[in-house]
Length: 373
Image (cartoon, rainbow, N blue to C red; front, top):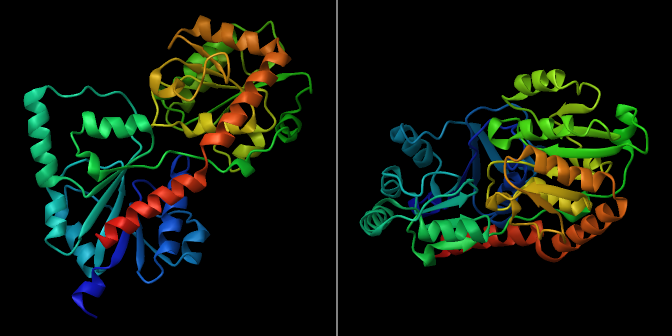
């Protein structure tokens, strides 16, 4: 096989165990679409640890391997790519610039793409630092950068100092067909009255997500017939379980853990809440809440609330203000017409703007243009 043919293969990189959920479920769809779009090329996918593997990978012809892509071990990565004739690497949430990238290029990797979903605010650099970052990107940057939202796109350019022509937008979207409403499955599972107002949150149980604020707000709403659910697991689970017991919420706040039926759980709820310190460009959990037609209460932290038009598609409250959060949830819990109006408007917003098919198309076209350039 010629060197040019060998170097046509694609490497997709998972940063976590193969059974990690959350936003990585969406990224799996990108991987599958890339493999289907280029059937004449071998597509490799590596995880640092393999547990359960999505069966759709095999159907797409993706070759899955256990391998840790560690930039501190560049020789191992270079050998891995050379042995498999990798010509393009699609990375997620990796450094904008690295000395590993030119080393990979010297060994047959012609194109490097970075898809940025990383959360949080960053400050635009001053003049001297901006110049240094531009030099760094020119010498050690990737070939294409994909932004998950307009905010991330602006951050790539203004904070990352990446030339605009290297950046592409693939705005996060979801599959609307997966989110029906209503559905009583979760109420039946928990033996809850049809009159109980169900409030749901969904994220990793990590202090950054501030689920503790939701617990504290729930403690202020004991006079109402309200039950709280949280979907997701993580390192903060023991702390939250303790806090729930201390607040006397054992029968009013349920940590469901990781679920494979998130859409069905959401469809049985009435209100959704998101209290995070910050989010990837467009929060998938909030998009899913909106798609289900749930009334929303979200922090006014900018990377969280950007999807919400206050008073139209949801309510916002001052970040970390537990009393304001409780007030917002109380307003929604006691007013079914308000919940209905906000939920319907939220659903219409997702229907008009946030389709996963558009996201997938943008990702695949970025890979296609990179391979042909």
